[in-house]
Amino acid sequence: MSASGLVARDGSAFALAQPNPPASLDVPIPSVSPRSFHAAMPGYRATPLRSAPAAARRVGVGEVLVKDESERLGLTSFKVLGASWAVYRALVAHLGATLEEIPSFQRLRAEVARARPLTLTAATDGNHGRAVAHIAALLGLDSHIYVPADMVPARIAAIEGEGAAVTVVDGGYEDAVERSAGDAGPRCLVISDTSWPGYEQVPAWVIEGYSTIFAEIDEALEAGGRPQPDVVVVPIGVGALAAALVGHYWSRPAPRPALVGVEPTSAACVLESVAAGRIVTLGHPQTSVMAGLNCATPSLVAWPIVSRGIDLYLAVPDSFIPEATRLLARDGIVAGECGAAGLAALLAMVDDEGLAGAGEGLSLDQTSRVLLISTEGATDPEAYRRLTAG
Image 1 (cartoon, rainbow, N blue to C red):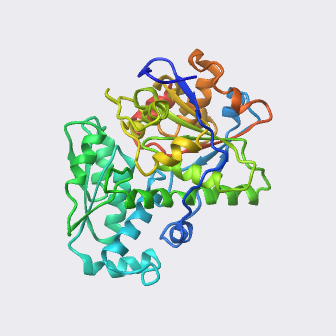
Image 2: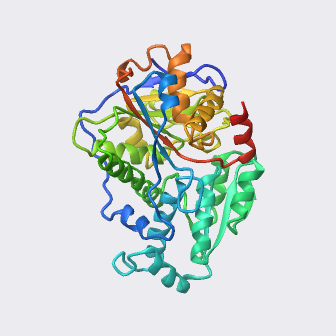
């Protein structure tokens, strides 16, 4: 099923199976464990791996497990894992030190005084920018976050609540990225989760930071005596989290689960790029309620991994988000619009004619175990109230 030339936007879902499945995939493995770093941070605890029986019944599978990232290190999103690890690595390099000399967040907080005044800047569609601002505040640094023009006030207020200066850019996410990149200098470090030519190391560190999620999942499964999932569904965006997912499961012994990436139909930049065989930038506005996935161009760093390591790419319209959010709420899981994207993809495979046959290679049935990554909680509380009220 090809997506080439399709721009469904708010219409039917569409899909693309991996056009050139590799027999093996070389993926980068962090030389230092982000999990150990995160585990030593103030307030760390592994986020829960929850069962979602109502969701499982609705989509007709044996079990749905949800990695619930609605509360992570004091924030409502997984993004702080990538942001904290990238800030740590970037500051150690900026200080001219080694990881051995600054082995922990606590030591970094003590050493960073000699770098002040220093600002951390980023572009965001919500969660990453708040995470960067949060880490900057913990370290006593300034932060400046650029956001697209359509950012909802609640998300802007959350970023400002972390002490950041916020600039609303007249344009979309890519325009905000361009503005933030221009701030780079001796007194300003750009901490971006997407990449561009000449700026690739920090986004690679962001991807490394997300590996903590999958280490925790393995530990939870092992502790509960549960087998590995048959299918894992992950929101894509620019591809950083999806790259961490691919890196984890392709580096594990066989058999590995089928990996499914989901994007909004108005922002399916990875799917369209895979269909084209090269990175493309979408030429239309990205208008999904899944605000964190409103991306027009895949990350250069994530692209070599997500373009080959995902088995099925799905683009789903916003119409599946309300039911997905309510089903997860019924199972005791608070999931914002991006957090509900994985379940929305499963609902689309069940209900949307545009995906007829898309899930055949996944062999989803009453015996299947499906893992969803719910990436955020109620980052827009008013929107979440409306969604769950139905």
